[in-house]
Length: 468
Image (cartoon, rainbow, N blue to C red; front, side, top):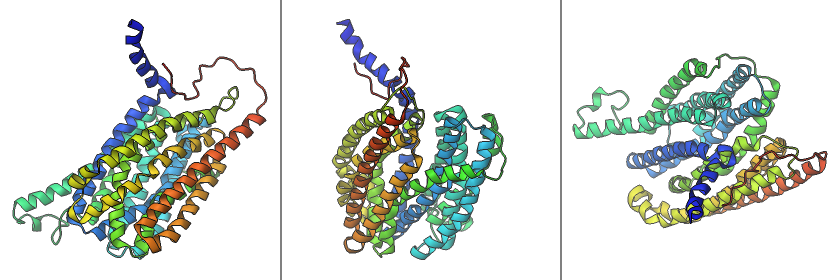
């Protein structure tokens, strides 16, 4: 009897320590994503009360344009920085100087391109508003992210999450602050309005004022991180010419991530570009709610990423087993989450959607179809990195992204949001199939090419979940 009583606690303890501490890192990542979810939903709730459905569609489309560029500007360089530090053992100060310089250069050049393109297809946001949002994300947030990755390389994943928490706290404070100003003005009968900057003719909570606040506060936080926080982790700030290999590594990560972001967000841009302004707003609102289901999967992927980088020649099939075990766990989580979202539809309609946005609830059940597909592709794509197949991984992402863009252009013009949903599901299915074909092929190839090595006990768990 005592053994039976101890077994649940023993199982919990073994799960908590499995995956080289993945559970603890996931708790940090999950806490951040929960806070980000709260901030995202609060932004959505407050914005839909003060802007039109069409303007909300423009807001979503603008971030859909910035997202793929952000993958090139900071996400790719950030992952390349981690690879340089954790896999190659590069010196920290030289590495962070190179990647920080690279990020600032890319953010400046691609930011101008993003402003130009967004100004053409988004006609109900001013060029100033677009410029402020783009600058805050591609310059301010990019520096914040690179510093976070650099800190992670020396102090661990929780240190990175703490840096991200700071940025999200800024966003949360801005939303609450501007909404609070509006509430104060309303309670005062409008008498305070002429004495407060930026709101003489409008409400405080506007997209333009969000851009102003983000640009100022992200920049201030980025400077604090560079000059004060980095030295706390024994790192020094400086800029230098990026090394050619750092450009290549950043492109190897950033380009496929950018195309993958186009796959994720391109449907909102195409809806806007082909005149589906109302559909773009409703679809953007529904997609925000579906993010409830994708966030736990992204937390697991992010926390598990570095665990796919080490290789062990004594363990054939290592990365394929890791991908299989992670994916099985994530797929189970995704099914539960998708079911919860569908069950919560009445709550969403009652609490989260204003009258103008009620139609978004019809899109939710269809959008949940791609949540399990997302769960199937992340781990094998990370496994390709462990096999040293970053170029082949990039080809898979790029091929899947281009496939999705073609589907968007085929299905969205005649079918609107229904075409967007169909194209999204088909493109995620394509990525899932292609990722597994790739890792199976290259794992077998790597096993055939490895010289025979006498295996010794190493304690390697292969990322497998423990059994009782």
